[in-house]
Image 1 (cartoon, helix red, strand yellow):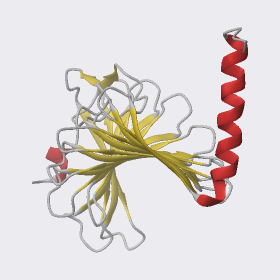
Image 2: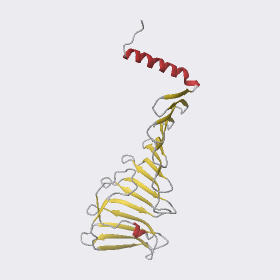
Image 3: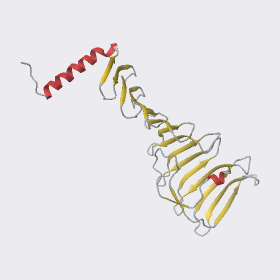
Length: 261
């Protein structure tokens, strides 16, 4: 399909400023009646091949779109930039280099807030979405999709300052949560992994780790009524766990004002 047809027709008015979420759809926009378009063609130094075509609203002079062409092929579109009328702020770029992707920008700061990536063999099927931290400009969240391009497989959350993974959430095909792994935000070492029953809410197992070095510490299994049915503690941490259990028992006795006769 022609890239020009795939691109959103402008002008547009932003309804939602594109705060990133897991929604596959690009920034919500309200289409306005198409104005008369004035085009400006920019040629490369050889004066033969087109570098880009800039489209303006003929009546207002507002820049609406810039179409960038491949260096070796005048008919092949490399990217399309789309702008908000009256402000001139870019809110979206559609890329066609290697595979299709859409970059969305915050119209106040001009910073990138989200990138939607599509399958190299099917430009209508989403493979992943990257969300960016406005302060650092680095990735803060990655959502991976299954081959259908609709259902979520995994969500990876990242500390944009340290670039360490802080949470990894896996989903079943039914879209219920399968497991959630939490990590030390400073060193990326595992801290805890929670597995859920098929409802995605009831905890089935919890694996605890030492967040300093990622060593396995304790395993706890629950039934569907949240009752503990099995607990295992790594030998290295057994004495530590016993101390914690005694401390919890003392606190419990103290809080309930129990006394031994």
